[in-house]
Picture 1: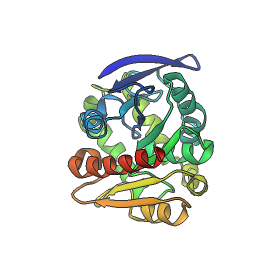
Picture 2 (picture 1 turned 45 degrees about the horizontal axis):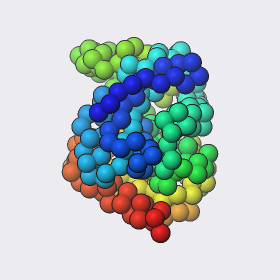
Picture 3 (picture 1 turned 180 degrees about the vertical axis):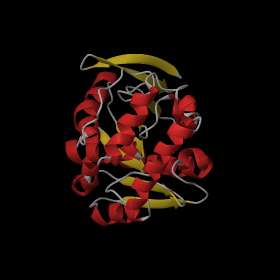
Picture 4 (picture 1 turned 60 degrees about the horizontal axis):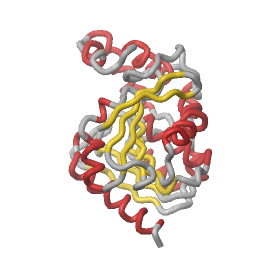
Length: 262
């Protein structure tokens, strides 16, 4: 793993890279969850790189990991802002030529908005794990519960090992989702505009989203889409059912690369 910082709009982002550079192989771009960062991908990037031979790139969004803090409250459009304004600049900065985005939770939603909203010519596929396409009561209840956990257990101190501004990371995400205005969050129109193949994954026991998320994905896209529920997994199948998840993603990537070489 190689680490470095990059500047986007004058703000510093923490980044990491595994494997070949963009001029030597396709790049898998990891987009972390609402409480994630580079370090919290753990060994997933290295295992994914070994399974695919691609380069793997990850960055911590503003307010997360060791990236610069972000002002609060976050706007209700924070995922749209990331997908449509910041992510394209990040891809330009690192010289991506052929990319597949792999997003988890909020990162999966960002991947969907980016793919449908920019139609980036460099993009050849999208993987969305436990993504949110609309708001569910189950989702809101779990986010309210984790706020209680953060404020009454050692969760804050454990998160502080990974985030430079731990309260900014937590409340920036939590406050946005619990704001009544966020109930209007709906990105189905971006799904309808995606023009590259899709892999949608969700843990069978995900407390943050029901299978209805995958059903909406399958119903509204007009491109080939593989949909899988991962057994023995909750909200993080890439960590909780690592072998099955990596094998499924690697097979999808292999097919995408074969298609692009024809």
